[in-house]
Image (tube, rainbow, N blue to C red; front, side, top):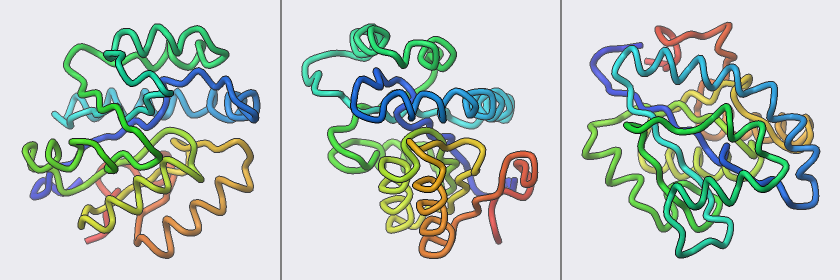
Length: 187
């Protein structure tokens, strides 16, 4: 990782009830990526990288973060949630729509933290991760979206999203096992 630009790790929609059509499929695809995200989080924390959870509100407009987490634990996504709980010093942004930037203070937070590079992880690759990546690209952030840190309801949808993320958004989409922090971003 280049030391001249600050990086942040975004964990997108991993606090998720998964109580929708396709939720079982998403859960099946999501469980394997939790280890990757937790490893990125651990390594990032050791390097002083801010960890930012970016999460849907699931229609709970008046809930706070602890209440949102407790409500989401009532769904089939509980095994993922229990592994992915935010730590006390992690940031938590609640979003109203698909992109982590739309209608949120994410961009302002990233500016205040001096962040220029983002690592995007989470679900669903073909929806919220893709839309967040698009908005990040339009705001000038360098992107690493590791293939082994993102899931969609089906592998084909995930691959389609990665084609767009790589080709149109100039993002590195290498797996964490291939890329690593030191080479995550193109110069």
